[in-house]
Length: 445
Image (tube, rainbow, N blue to C red; front, side, top):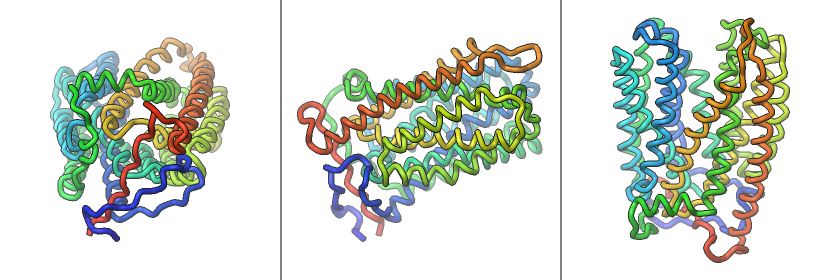
């Protein structure tokens, strides 16, 4: 065990990104950071996801229409996307711990405003504020992961953090629905604030300053820093891949529940069970997939996820009336394919930005995810048509689009993987020199 502040050894930098390297053990401090970021992500994801199932209570309580409710939901995503882009130029100019605390505090303040909203305009403004701050929290979190963990560990860390999405489905949404049924639609927002306050306290008291990147930062204006980031050919390749990864998923996601009920014939009251079973499997699968990406190679796991996703999407989008167990099997395998892609891609592309650009890169990437997802949902709405019986028509077309985007992202990731391997082996000198590996974090004594 090393003492705080003592230099730690680096992993060798001439190895392939996560392929065949021995799995280094986490220190107790690294375990804390990974768990803390996972709980933080849980609150962000839950706040975003729980408004849709609360719609049946929110709409009559605030006397708003379906169109107004749709605007409330989409406002969060577009606000998050805008904030990520606006703060990208500043993201690398501050200690990441302070930046995280500032924007997470703003997110919690916005969530409180959601809880006390008593009209449509108040809720709309509250969701806008929440999205503006939440959009930066995620990018700062992933920048911290890239700063504090070497590439050989990032698959496992990303796997732990991604379980927040599954946990919000399995635990968060059912608890939110329970609270809203007993104490009103706004009660779940106060639950998020309570959990978030505890997470914020841990960040303040236990997380060490994350400011090593400041030593590498050149003296340039925030606008220049942003322009340098979005015009860097190395980073543009990552941005395009991130955008395409978001497009396919966001096309299917808004219509999964409707398709499962009206086309596959699953009773509406059984739908929460499908989400709970799928989420439970993902909680187990996330860390395992992260470990596999570190042990066998991040691109190999990504390719596996692409193949599994394509097969299961084609099966799912062509399903007709089917038993509950069959839908659960298909959804579990589909989610494993999606998680394989998300975890391995996040870990591999974290090697693209240089230390001085990580915050800016993650902010632009996060912003692009939000915007691409919003645009994809709108396009999907024009493709899918609801029949008089309630069945969705042309849903299979969305599946074909996802297959195409998956094939393109697989190609992009192949070249990204080759570039990172070559750079780490010293084969690509010049302007595309590899980003230095972060020093392994010393364990708190």
